[in-house]
Length: 408
Image 1 (cartoon, rainbow, N blue to C red):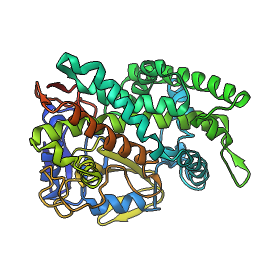
Image 2: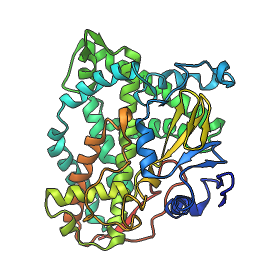
Image 3: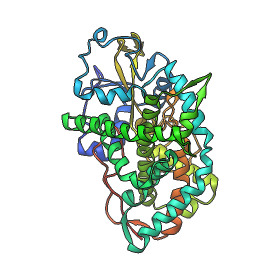
Image 4: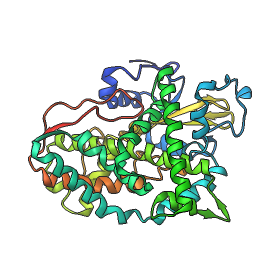
Protein backbone atom coordinates (compact mmCIF):
# COMPACT_ATOMS: atom_id res chain seq x y z
CA UNK A 1 0.00 0.00 0.00
CA UNK A 2 1.05 3.60 -0.55
CA UNK A 3 -0.27 6.66 1.26
CA UNK A 4 0.72 10.22 0.41
CA UNK A 5 -0.02 12.38 3.48
CA UNK A 6 0.51 15.62 1.54
CA UNK A 7 -2.55 15.06 -0.62
CA UNK A 8 -4.12 12.24 1.47
CA UNK A 9 -4.21 9.86 -1.48
CA UNK A 10 -4.24 6.12 -0.79
CA UNK A 11 -3.14 3.53 -3.34
CA UNK A 12 -4.10 -0.09 -2.67
CA UNK A 13 -5.96 -2.57 -4.85
CA UNK A 14 -8.63 -4.08 -2.55
CA UNK A 15 -8.09 -7.45 -4.23
CA UNK A 16 -4.51 -7.57 -2.84
CA UNK A 17 -4.31 -10.90 -0.94
CA UNK A 18 -2.88 -9.41 2.25
CA UNK A 19 -5.66 -6.83 2.43
CA UNK A 20 -8.35 -9.41 1.68
CA UNK A 21 -7.13 -11.59 4.56
CA UNK A 22 -6.57 -8.77 7.07
CA UNK A 23 -7.91 -5.33 6.18
CA UNK A 24 -7.71 -4.21 9.81
CA UNK A 25 -3.95 -3.67 9.74
CA UNK A 26 -4.39 -1.28 6.82
CA UNK A 27 -7.28 0.48 8.56
CA UNK A 28 -5.12 0.98 11.68
CA UNK A 29 -2.30 2.49 9.62
CA UNK A 30 -4.69 4.93 7.93
CA UNK A 31 -6.47 5.86 11.15
CA UNK A 32 -3.15 6.81 12.72
CA UNK A 33 -2.46 9.26 9.87
CA UNK A 34 -5.69 10.82 8.68
CA UNK A 35 -9.39 11.45 9.23
CA UNK A 36 -10.14 11.00 5.52
CA UNK A 37 -8.32 9.72 2.44
CA UNK A 38 -8.89 9.54 -1.30
CA UNK A 39 -8.84 5.89 -2.38
CA UNK A 40 -7.32 5.89 -5.86
CA UNK A 41 -8.81 2.58 -6.98
CA UNK A 42 -12.35 3.65 -6.11
CA UNK A 43 -12.00 7.30 -7.07
CA UNK A 44 -13.66 8.79 -4.00
CA UNK A 45 -12.97 9.99 -0.45
CA UNK A 46 -13.26 7.48 2.38
CA UNK A 47 -13.68 7.90 6.12
CA UNK A 48 -12.20 5.31 8.52
CA UNK A 49 -13.05 6.69 11.99
CA UNK A 50 -16.17 5.85 13.96
CA UNK A 51 -17.25 9.41 14.69
CA UNK A 52 -17.23 10.49 11.03
CA UNK A 53 -18.80 7.24 9.81
CA UNK A 54 -21.57 7.46 12.38
CA UNK A 55 -22.22 11.14 11.63
CA UNK A 56 -22.14 10.77 7.85
CA UNK A 57 -24.54 7.83 7.92
CA UNK A 58 -27.04 10.27 9.48
CA UNK A 59 -26.08 13.44 7.58
CA UNK A 60 -29.00 14.65 5.44
CA UNK A 61 -26.60 16.39 3.06
CA UNK A 62 -25.78 12.92 1.72
CA UNK A 63 -27.98 10.25 0.18
CA UNK A 64 -27.92 6.77 -1.25
CA UNK A 65 -29.08 8.18 -4.58
CA UNK A 66 -28.44 11.41 -6.42
CA UNK A 67 -30.59 11.18 -9.55
CA UNK A 68 -33.65 12.44 -7.64
CA UNK A 69 -31.99 15.88 -7.46
CA UNK A 70 -29.81 15.93 -10.59
CA UNK A 71 -29.78 14.25 -14.00
CA UNK A 72 -26.94 12.13 -15.32
CA UNK A 73 -26.20 14.88 -17.85
CA UNK A 74 -25.99 17.54 -15.12
CA UNK A 75 -23.57 15.35 -13.20
CA UNK A 76 -21.48 14.62 -16.29
CA UNK A 77 -22.26 10.91 -16.09
CA UNK A 78 -22.51 8.84 -19.28
CA UNK A 79 -25.85 7.22 -20.07
CA UNK A 80 -26.54 3.94 -18.30
CA UNK A 81 -25.59 1.07 -20.67
CA UNK A 82 -28.64 -0.71 -22.08
CA UNK A 83 -27.41 -4.14 -21.00
CA UNK A 84 -27.58 -3.29 -17.26
CA UNK A 85 -30.87 -1.35 -17.29
CA UNK A 86 -33.01 -4.36 -16.24
CA UNK A 87 -30.92 -4.69 -13.07
CA UNK A 88 -31.24 -1.00 -12.15
CA UNK A 89 -34.92 -0.93 -13.09
CA UNK A 90 -35.44 -3.31 -10.19
CA UNK A 91 -32.89 -1.69 -7.87
CA UNK A 92 -34.54 1.73 -8.19
CA UNK A 93 -37.32 0.49 -5.88
CA UNK A 94 -34.92 -0.76 -3.20
CA UNK A 95 -35.07 0.70 0.30
CA UNK A 96 -31.28 0.80 0.22
CA UNK A 97 -31.27 3.08 -2.81
CA UNK A 98 -34.09 5.50 -1.95
CA UNK A 99 -34.19 8.82 -0.12
CA UNK A 100 -37.10 10.65 1.55
CA UNK A 101 -39.93 11.02 0.89
CA UNK A 102 -39.96 7.81 -1.20
CA UNK A 103 -37.80 6.01 1.37
CA UNK A 104 -39.97 7.14 4.29
CA UNK A 105 -43.14 5.83 2.66
CA UNK A 106 -41.68 2.48 1.61
CA UNK A 107 -39.84 1.86 4.89
CA UNK A 108 -43.03 2.48 6.85
CA UNK A 109 -44.94 -0.01 4.72
CA UNK A 110 -42.21 -2.65 4.87
CA UNK A 111 -41.43 -2.08 8.52
CA UNK A 112 -45.04 -2.58 9.52
CA UNK A 113 -45.19 -5.89 7.69
CA UNK A 114 -41.79 -7.02 8.88
CA UNK A 115 -42.25 -6.05 12.51
CA UNK A 116 -45.78 -7.44 12.59
CA UNK A 117 -44.30 -10.91 12.33
CA UNK A 118 -42.63 -10.30 15.69
CA UNK A 119 -39.16 -11.56 14.90
CA UNK A 120 -38.80 -13.08 18.36
CA UNK A 121 -41.51 -15.59 17.46
CA UNK A 122 -39.04 -17.13 15.01
CA UNK A 123 -36.74 -18.29 17.84
CA UNK A 124 -38.14 -21.86 18.05
CA UNK A 125 -38.05 -22.24 14.27
CA UNK A 126 -34.40 -21.10 14.09
CA UNK A 127 -33.45 -23.42 16.97
CA UNK A 128 -35.15 -26.40 15.32
CA UNK A 129 -33.43 -25.63 12.02
CA UNK A 130 -30.00 -25.40 13.69
CA UNK A 131 -30.56 -28.71 15.46
CA UNK A 132 -31.70 -30.43 12.25
CA UNK A 133 -28.69 -29.16 10.29
CA UNK A 134 -26.29 -30.39 12.98
CA UNK A 135 -28.07 -33.77 13.04
CA UNK A 136 -27.26 -34.03 9.34
CA UNK A 137 -23.50 -33.45 9.53
CA UNK A 138 -22.50 -34.27 13.13
CA UNK A 139 -21.91 -38.01 12.48
CA UNK A 140 -19.29 -37.14 9.83
CA UNK A 141 -16.90 -35.63 12.38
CA UNK A 142 -15.84 -32.94 9.92
CA UNK A 143 -17.61 -30.41 7.70
CA UNK A 144 -17.41 -27.04 6.02
CA UNK A 145 -19.56 -25.16 8.51
CA UNK A 146 -19.97 -22.23 6.14
CA UNK A 147 -21.82 -24.44 3.65
CA UNK A 148 -23.39 -26.90 6.10
CA UNK A 149 -24.51 -24.50 8.84
CA UNK A 150 -23.98 -20.75 8.29
CA UNK A 151 -25.41 -20.57 4.76
CA UNK A 152 -28.63 -22.63 5.11
CA UNK A 153 -29.93 -20.95 8.26
CA UNK A 154 -30.66 -17.42 6.99
CA UNK A 155 -31.78 -18.44 3.51
CA UNK A 156 -34.17 -21.12 4.80
CA UNK A 157 -35.58 -18.75 7.42
CA UNK A 158 -36.17 -16.03 4.82
CA UNK A 159 -37.66 -18.52 2.34
CA UNK A 160 -40.07 -19.69 5.05
CA UNK A 161 -40.92 -16.10 5.94
CA UNK A 162 -41.63 -15.26 2.30
CA UNK A 163 -43.66 -18.42 1.92
CA UNK A 164 -41.64 -19.85 -0.99
CA UNK A 165 -40.60 -23.53 -1.09
CA UNK A 166 -37.55 -24.38 1.00
CA UNK A 167 -36.33 -26.64 -1.79
CA UNK A 168 -35.87 -23.45 -3.82
CA UNK A 169 -33.08 -22.21 -1.53
CA UNK A 170 -30.24 -23.33 -3.83
CA UNK A 171 -31.78 -21.39 -6.70
CA UNK A 172 -32.50 -18.38 -4.49
CA UNK A 173 -28.86 -18.32 -3.37
CA UNK A 174 -27.63 -18.55 -6.94
CA UNK A 175 -29.77 -15.58 -7.99
CA UNK A 176 -28.74 -13.65 -4.91
CA UNK A 177 -24.98 -14.23 -5.33
CA UNK A 178 -25.13 -13.11 -8.96
CA UNK A 179 -27.01 -9.93 -8.08
CA UNK A 180 -24.82 -9.04 -5.08
CA UNK A 181 -21.71 -9.41 -7.28
CA UNK A 182 -22.69 -6.11 -8.92
CA UNK A 183 -21.45 -4.31 -5.80
CA UNK A 184 -18.03 -5.94 -5.62
CA UNK A 185 -14.88 -4.15 -6.68
CA UNK A 186 -13.94 -4.48 -10.35
CA UNK A 187 -16.98 -6.12 -11.89
CA UNK A 188 -16.93 -7.05 -15.59
CA UNK A 189 -19.41 -7.64 -18.42
CA UNK A 190 -19.82 -11.33 -17.51
CA UNK A 191 -20.79 -10.38 -13.94
CA UNK A 192 -23.22 -7.76 -15.24
CA UNK A 193 -24.87 -10.14 -17.70
CA UNK A 194 -25.22 -12.81 -15.01
CA UNK A 195 -26.73 -10.27 -12.59
CA UNK A 196 -29.28 -9.07 -15.16
CA UNK A 197 -30.33 -12.64 -15.98
CA UNK A 198 -30.64 -13.49 -12.28
CA UNK A 199 -32.65 -10.31 -11.62
CA UNK A 200 -35.13 -11.06 -14.37
CA UNK A 201 -35.54 -14.72 -13.34
CA UNK A 202 -35.89 -13.84 -9.65
CA UNK A 203 -38.44 -11.10 -10.41
CA UNK A 204 -40.54 -13.40 -12.60
CA UNK A 205 -40.50 -16.06 -9.86
CA UNK A 206 -41.65 -13.59 -7.20
CA UNK A 207 -44.32 -12.05 -9.42
CA UNK A 208 -45.94 -15.45 -9.84
CA UNK A 209 -45.96 -15.93 -6.07
CA UNK A 210 -47.32 -12.45 -5.41
CA UNK A 211 -50.18 -12.94 -7.86
CA UNK A 212 -51.01 -16.29 -6.29
CA UNK A 213 -51.05 -14.70 -2.82
CA UNK A 214 -53.47 -12.03 -4.02
CA UNK A 215 -55.88 -14.80 -4.96
CA UNK A 216 -55.14 -16.96 -1.92
CA UNK A 217 -53.52 -15.11 1.00
CA UNK A 218 -51.27 -17.05 3.34
CA UNK A 219 -49.41 -16.62 6.64
CA UNK A 220 -46.25 -15.28 5.03
CA UNK A 221 -44.34 -12.07 4.43
CA UNK A 222 -45.45 -11.69 0.79
CA UNK A 223 -49.08 -11.68 1.93
CA UNK A 224 -48.31 -9.20 4.71
CA UNK A 225 -46.49 -6.91 2.27
CA UNK A 226 -49.45 -7.10 -0.11
CA UNK A 227 -51.75 -6.09 2.73
CA UNK A 228 -49.47 -3.38 4.16
CA UNK A 229 -50.87 0.11 3.93
CA UNK A 230 -49.93 3.53 5.25
CA UNK A 231 -52.36 6.45 4.92
CA UNK A 232 -54.28 4.51 2.31
CA UNK A 233 -51.08 3.79 0.37
CA UNK A 234 -49.78 0.33 -0.53
CA UNK A 235 -46.75 -1.21 -2.19
CA UNK A 236 -46.79 -1.43 -5.96
CA UNK A 237 -45.97 -4.82 -7.44
CA UNK A 238 -42.50 -3.57 -8.46
CA UNK A 239 -41.84 -2.33 -4.91
CA UNK A 240 -42.99 -5.63 -3.48
CA UNK A 241 -40.72 -7.64 -5.78
CA UNK A 242 -37.67 -5.49 -5.08
CA UNK A 243 -38.32 -5.57 -1.32
CA UNK A 244 -38.50 -9.37 -1.28
CA UNK A 245 -35.24 -9.51 -3.23
CA UNK A 246 -33.59 -7.10 -0.81
CA UNK A 247 -34.67 -9.12 2.23
CA UNK A 248 -33.03 -12.21 0.77
CA UNK A 249 -29.94 -10.61 -0.77
CA UNK A 250 -29.01 -8.34 2.12
CA UNK A 251 -30.43 -10.56 4.84
CA UNK A 252 -28.64 -13.78 4.03
CA UNK A 253 -25.33 -12.11 3.13
CA UNK A 254 -24.98 -10.48 6.55
CA UNK A 255 -26.01 -13.50 8.61
CA UNK A 256 -24.03 -16.09 6.67
CA UNK A 257 -20.82 -14.18 7.25
CA UNK A 258 -21.83 -13.07 10.73
CA UNK A 259 -22.11 -16.75 11.66
CA UNK A 260 -19.01 -17.85 9.74
CA UNK A 261 -16.79 -15.03 10.98
CA UNK A 262 -18.14 -15.57 14.49
CA UNK A 263 -17.32 -19.28 14.59
CA UNK A 264 -13.81 -18.48 13.34
CA UNK A 265 -13.31 -15.77 15.96
CA UNK A 266 -14.45 -17.99 18.83
CA UNK A 267 -12.32 -20.96 17.78
CA UNK A 268 -9.22 -18.85 17.20
CA UNK A 269 -9.68 -17.04 20.52
CA UNK A 270 -9.79 -20.39 22.37
CA UNK A 271 -12.36 -18.91 24.74
CA UNK A 272 -14.70 -21.28 26.54
CA UNK A 273 -18.03 -21.31 24.65
CA UNK A 274 -19.82 -22.23 27.88
CA UNK A 275 -18.85 -18.81 29.25
CA UNK A 276 -19.55 -17.00 25.99
CA UNK A 277 -23.10 -18.37 25.91
CA UNK A 278 -23.70 -18.83 29.64
CA UNK A 279 -26.95 -16.86 29.57
CA UNK A 280 -28.89 -14.39 27.48
CA UNK A 281 -26.75 -11.40 28.42
CA UNK A 282 -23.50 -13.23 27.69
CA UNK A 283 -24.85 -14.47 24.36
CA UNK A 284 -25.93 -10.96 23.36
CA UNK A 285 -22.52 -9.55 24.29
CA UNK A 286 -20.73 -12.28 22.32
CA UNK A 287 -22.81 -11.68 19.20
CA UNK A 288 -22.32 -7.90 19.38
CA UNK A 289 -18.56 -8.36 19.76
CA UNK A 290 -18.51 -10.67 16.72
CA UNK A 291 -20.32 -8.04 14.69
CA UNK A 292 -17.92 -5.36 15.90
CA UNK A 293 -14.72 -7.35 15.53
CA UNK A 294 -15.31 -8.87 12.08
CA UNK A 295 -18.40 -7.39 10.38
CA UNK A 296 -19.67 -8.82 7.09
CA UNK A 297 -19.94 -5.43 5.33
CA UNK A 298 -16.98 -3.05 5.26
CA UNK A 299 -18.09 -0.13 3.11
CA UNK A 300 -21.32 1.83 2.68
CA UNK A 301 -21.38 4.56 0.03
CA UNK A 302 -23.37 7.79 -0.15
CA UNK A 303 -23.61 10.73 -2.57
CA UNK A 304 -23.15 14.41 -1.76
CA UNK A 305 -26.51 16.02 -2.54
CA UNK A 306 -24.91 19.46 -2.88
CA UNK A 307 -21.47 21.07 -2.90
CA UNK A 308 -19.97 20.51 0.56
CA UNK A 309 -16.74 21.31 2.37
CA UNK A 310 -16.27 18.50 4.85
CA UNK A 311 -13.42 19.23 7.25
CA UNK A 312 -11.05 20.12 4.44
CA UNK A 313 -12.48 17.66 1.90
CA UNK A 314 -14.15 19.52 -0.95
CA UNK A 315 -17.05 17.63 -2.46
CA UNK A 316 -19.19 18.52 -5.44
CA UNK A 317 -22.80 17.50 -5.88
CA UNK A 318 -22.84 13.90 -7.07
CA UNK A 319 -19.48 12.97 -5.54
CA UNK A 320 -19.52 9.61 -3.80
CA UNK A 321 -17.99 8.94 -0.39
CA UNK A 322 -17.06 5.64 1.25
CA UNK A 323 -17.92 5.04 4.90
CA UNK A 324 -15.66 2.24 6.15
CA UNK A 325 -17.80 0.29 8.59
CA UNK A 326 -15.10 -2.29 9.24
CA UNK A 327 -12.56 0.40 10.06
CA UNK A 328 -15.04 2.30 12.24
CA UNK A 329 -15.57 -0.86 14.29
CA UNK A 330 -11.80 -0.95 14.92
CA UNK A 331 -11.38 2.71 15.83
CA UNK A 332 -9.11 2.70 18.91
CA UNK A 333 -10.63 5.98 20.08
CA UNK A 334 -13.99 4.26 20.58
CA UNK A 335 -12.98 0.65 21.22
CA UNK A 336 -10.02 -0.12 23.49
CA UNK A 337 -7.63 -2.63 21.88
CA UNK A 338 -9.99 -3.09 18.93
CA UNK A 339 -7.89 -5.88 17.40
CA UNK A 340 -8.77 -8.16 20.34
CA UNK A 341 -11.95 -10.23 20.37
CA UNK A 342 -13.33 -9.42 23.82
CA UNK A 343 -16.99 -10.28 24.48
CA UNK A 344 -16.65 -8.81 27.97
CA UNK A 345 -15.99 -5.29 26.71
CA UNK A 346 -18.72 -2.78 27.64
CA UNK A 347 -21.55 -2.80 25.12
CA UNK A 348 -21.29 0.16 22.74
CA UNK A 349 -23.06 0.83 19.49
CA UNK A 350 -21.00 -0.33 16.51
CA UNK A 351 -21.35 0.34 12.79
CA UNK A 352 -21.94 -3.19 11.47
CA UNK A 353 -25.60 -2.50 10.59
CA UNK A 354 -25.12 1.15 9.61
CA UNK A 355 -27.06 4.03 11.18
CA UNK A 356 -29.63 6.65 10.31
CA UNK A 357 -32.55 6.08 7.99
CA UNK A 358 -30.74 3.23 6.23
CA UNK A 359 -30.03 1.26 9.39
CA UNK A 360 -30.43 -2.41 8.42
CA UNK A 361 -34.12 -3.31 8.61
CA UNK A 362 -33.18 -6.97 9.08
CA UNK A 363 -30.80 -6.37 12.01
CA UNK A 364 -33.17 -7.86 14.63
CA UNK A 365 -33.49 -11.05 12.60
CA UNK A 366 -29.74 -11.32 11.94
CA UNK A 367 -29.02 -10.86 15.64
CA UNK A 368 -31.63 -13.44 16.62
CA UNK A 369 -30.28 -16.02 14.17
CA UNK A 370 -26.77 -15.61 15.56
CA UNK A 371 -27.93 -15.60 19.19
CA UNK A 372 -29.88 -18.83 18.66
CA UNK A 373 -27.65 -20.77 16.28
CA UNK A 374 -24.19 -20.22 17.77
CA UNK A 375 -24.92 -21.53 21.31
CA UNK A 376 -26.60 -24.62 19.85
CA UNK A 377 -23.62 -25.33 17.60
CA UNK A 378 -21.05 -25.13 20.39
CA UNK A 379 -23.25 -27.10 22.80
CA UNK A 380 -23.83 -29.90 20.31
CA UNK A 381 -20.17 -30.07 19.19
CA UNK A 382 -18.10 -29.47 22.35
CA UNK A 383 -14.87 -30.60 20.67
CA UNK A 384 -15.28 -28.19 17.76
CA UNK A 385 -11.96 -27.01 16.29
CA UNK A 386 -10.57 -25.69 13.01
CA UNK A 387 -9.15 -28.32 10.67
CA UNK A 388 -7.54 -25.78 8.34
CA UNK A 389 -6.78 -22.07 8.41
CA UNK A 390 -9.89 -20.23 7.15
CA UNK A 391 -9.36 -17.81 4.26
CA UNK A 392 -11.51 -14.84 3.34
CA UNK A 393 -13.07 -14.51 -0.09
CA UNK A 394 -11.85 -11.84 -2.48
CA UNK A 395 -15.18 -9.97 -2.52
CA UNK A 396 -14.45 -6.58 -0.92
CA UNK A 397 -16.40 -4.65 0.31
CA UNK A 398 -18.11 -7.76 1.64
CA UNK A 399 -16.03 -9.65 4.17
CA UNK A 400 -16.63 -13.36 4.61
CA UNK A 401 -14.92 -16.71 4.42
CA UNK A 402 -14.43 -18.97 1.43
CA UNK A 403 -15.11 -21.98 3.65
CA UNK A 404 -14.84 -23.02 7.29
CA UNK A 405 -13.46 -26.54 7.65
CA UNK A 406 -13.88 -27.88 11.19
CA UNK A 407 -13.59 -31.15 13.13
CA UNK A 408 -15.11 -32.30 16.41
